[in-house]
Structure formats: structure tokens, C-alpha cells
Image 1 (tube, chains in turn cyan, brown):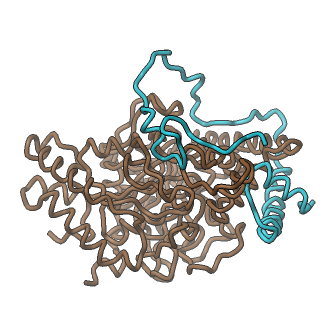
Image 2: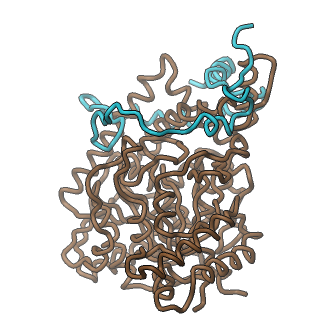
Image 3: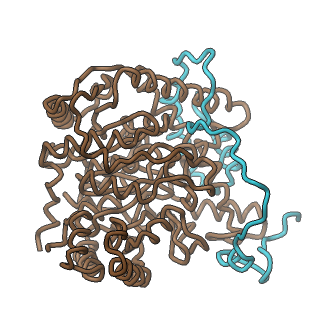
Length: 95
Length: 488
């Protein structure tokens, strides 16, 4: 089933992607083609097949909870678009 | 010695014989780079002062202990621009990271610096490593050294072109669905994707975390083995890093293939292959048989589901990983009155079309009501694909097949996203199953390079090099260079 313009706008908002109407239209058509191809997965017999999230066979990799050196505050702030010298600055979250 | 196109092994021998110095090798690399990169656009940044410092360091290491200095000491290398290098631009080919200078260095890169390697610069790539042609870089496409009107493959196209054009003997890329092996095939060099977890991803800008793996490009299988060993091994900073000891690919190079059982997956030789690719790969299989390998046709029935599985899992992981680009802690910010508007504009203007497409696809596949139909189902089919490899590897030691269904195509000729994705149909299943795979040159079709892919079981990385080296020794294809390498 093709994606409606509302579907595409909803997904763009979920992804916080500011797209123009033209971009949403183009991506919507492209996603329809890709999703049609992906629907091939419905043919696969996956009854009793477990999911694979990762292939490394590692389980619960922990380390001891001991403090270790990390980035300094200044290093962590060096790429920030805006700071007050000690913290990241962002616009107001509530109006 | 003539340096353009020399291998790292030749350079290392010359360094120890006193016939050259790290400085001279760097000067040659820079000369080749400045002669050719105006046409190729393989590099996004030159790391001149770092290269100079590493030259001094390497010269000191070689003077102190020529035998103890590792095989990459004094060797010029190039790094894909998704690998963090503290203090130097690391853009991932994206506008959103145009001014980003990471405060830390990737583990793989740190190991190379400690080994005395000399990084000449950061190489161009598809934005966030998403693409099969390197046309998705925000900083311009990369030319194929065999024909600059054609793509070098992707996403590690800059790293492939840097080796194929003789600028550096070794470079590093990343492979999430074929992004090392496919460009290696299209530019006529060797490209190796290790077993998932073999090389630390710490400091690698994430695309799809369950699939991404760092690996080398080189002109020979031997150089690729040495380049792999230099970065392989456990790293406590990457929780998916494999603790098992690294099997030795360098000593495996001499083992040959007499008595080795090689499987030819039927589904990889089917429709969609360019005739010249099919012919070259069939000839390569005959060469391996002549060397004593037994050849058996095998079947991986879910192969055609690989692409669909990948194009749910990789975009899902990408949409999650790329959520961090919010213009708050790093990267570009487009300021708007409200925070939501700031996020929308920052991301809308910062990401290019292919990244936007995949973020949209991944967000959709993970969204409420669709998760089971897409993401959970894809994870189950991923299990099927991995089990089919497991079962085939009970009968054969390694698989041999084409890397890419076709040779390098002309820039701008593939506009349909799905058609572009099909370029990776033969490399993607290897990532889904976490296996090691290599591409090496096996001849030409329409005067353009064809890649032969060798795949082995998980953690049997050395076997990939064993088979590849046996083939390489029996043929001369690895000695073919792109015409632009020699023409002064």
C-alpha cells in the first residue's frame, strides 16, 4: 500500500527531518518502490526462527565500575555550536 | 625505486635496505597526490603536519630497531573520513560535520600511529558511508582511476581510488554492506572486510552498528594481510570487539589451496551478472581448481532476501545512530526560534538526499505498528541467512564468487535508489552474517577491473587470505595498474 502524504509527513516529524513538500513527495515515491521490494520478506518461512540482533555471540559485556579518565569539560565542549563556557546552550524547550 | 604503485612490502624492504626514507616515501605520495587528485577528488583533507611528525617518528623507530619496527613503519597511508583523528577534520562526507574536529582518535587509527604509519590525509566517501558509488559525498564525487568519468564504487571510494592511483600503498575504509569490497572490485585493488568485531569500532562514526567493520585496501593480498593485522584485536572500548586471539593471516599466505574445499554459491552466479564478470570469475575458479582446490556448487537459498533484510536493518540502525546530530553538542546548527524548528532545519539542511531517505526508511520500519512487520521480521531472516552460511561451511572451507555484479559504471547513470542498492547484492549477506570477505582483482571486462570475492567462516579471516594469496600468486591481475598511475 503506497504511503500517503500524511504518512510521509508523520515519519519526517518522528525523524525530526525538515523536508520541503517537494522532498517529501519524492522520498514518498522512492520509499514506495523500496518497500515494495522489501515485501519479499513476507515469503520467508520464519516460524520458530529467533531474531539476530548482533552476530558476535557476545553476551553482557561488562567492565568493573571504576572511574577512568575521560574527556575534559573543555574538550567535550570544543565542537558545540553554542556554550556559555561550561555548558551546552540550546533554545528554550518550553514556550 | 619507483614509488608510484610500489607495494608496502617493497617500501618496507627499501626502508630497511637504506634505499629510501619515510620522508622520501611521503614526498612521493604527496607528488602523486598533487598530480592526480585534481581529477579524482579522493581526499577531503591533507594531514600534513601529522604526516611530518609521523615521518620523524618512523625514522627514529627504524634507526633504533629496524627489525622490531613493524611492517607499516614509515609507510604512507590514507584514512576514510569516518575515522576519528583527534584535532583534524572528520566530516563523514556530510555538511552536518563540515567543521567537526573530534577530540579523540579511533582505536584503529591510534594503532596505526603507534606502528609508525604516516597518514597523508582523510579520504572522500559517501555521506555517512551510505552509498555504492561515492556520488553521495557532500563534497563532490570521486573519479575511478581507470576512467575518471566512472564511479570508483562506494562508500569507501576515496580510499579505493587513493590506492588504485598509486598515491598510497595502503588505505582504510569501512564496510557495512560492501563498502570496502565493492570499490576494491571496481578500482582493481584488494579490499578486506574482517569478521564482525575483529577490528574495534571505537572512534568510527557509526552508520549501522551491527554491520559496520573497518578494513584495509591494498594492491596485494600480502599488504592487505599486514594492514589488517595492524588494526585487528580486542579493544575494551568497543563492547562488540571480539576477545579471541587474532589468527595469523601472514603465515597463512604461504599455505596454498591444495586440498581446500571451495564452494561456489549458485545464487551468486545467477541472473544479473554482467557476462564479463561471470567469465572472469569462472576462469578464476578454474585457476583455483588447477592449484589443487576441490570445487563444489553449493546453495544459499535466502540470498535474494539479503538486500531486503539489509535495507530494513541498516536504515533502522542508521536512523537511531543519526539521531545524535541535533546541533547541540557538535556539528552544524541552524538556529530557529523553537527547539523543534531548530532540530528540523539543522537536520534537513545538514543531511543529503540518500541519508534523508535512509533515515526516513529506518524511522518508518521502527515506527509503532510497523516494527513487527519490518524490523523484527528482518532480524529473523537475518538468522536464516546466517544459518545457511553455517550449514554450507560444514561442507566447504571457503566460498568463491563475484564481488560486484558489474564493473564500474558511468557517473550519474544510476538515479533510482533501488537500482543503486542492487550493486551490493553479493556483498550484503556477508555483513548480515558477520563473516570475513575479501575482493581481489581477477581480470578485466570491457577494459575495467573485475573483483573476485572469497568468503570464510566467522573468525577464519586467515583462510580468506590463504585462498586469495594462492590465486594471486598464480595470476598476474594484481600487477595491472590503472593507466593514469604510470603516465607522467
